Length: 334
Image (tube, rainbow, N blue to C red):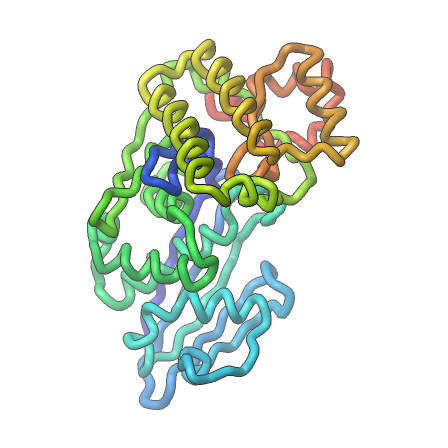
């Protein structure tokens, strides 16, 4: 019996949303304040494989996946959790026919944060399966590994750049859990392997502000409607990419504040900032009142917004409850 363990950090997309879908650069950060801890045991057996997944993360707390569920001809409907894991595991299925597998998700974080809970699962399970099957930790440079990861993503959500899974995989190699890491991600034409580079902002980390929970689930319908024409797609993508490219090389506080203003204007043009939520509008009004730069995060308006202000200023001046400050850079820099 073999046992495997991985720890996958949370992520946040800082700049490059939409642009990354068309080959542009995305800037992201990973951190272990929130993380997924996943373990797995592998046992050889002669019959059809049985895969068991244990976790409080999903409703049933325990999922059992049989060999038959991987067969496309099997039209039996799957519940949401089973659908996710069957499609995640499909690219690896042929290697799992004669094994019993048991996964334990020992630590997780809420999807409501927008910190990449689904992508953490794809990253963690893919990394474990690669280690199990190929006994090779050098997965970030493997075409086969990335083809399987991209197939899992396509099976589950249909499309996506894969930036979230990629930076979380890269971040999982960091051994010091008190370290946060900034990443540049870009897909490479003609290659399944993305370009992932670590970088560090010129601005002191303690001045990079906070992520504030909006308590509004990201809704990309309006943005996707704007994306119906190819002209709009390429226009918005190019604008987001330009900001990410500028920030990669020039990221002082002033650079960040200006980039946030530009990014916010694009988000307004895309109509992805919710206007029907009174609490959200009040939050934005407070930030404007105190001239605090902010931006939406991710492809929708984001489950969090990024603000360039210290926790104390947000709590005292803007009356933002401390529990709504989901992440603060100042906790990682003094």
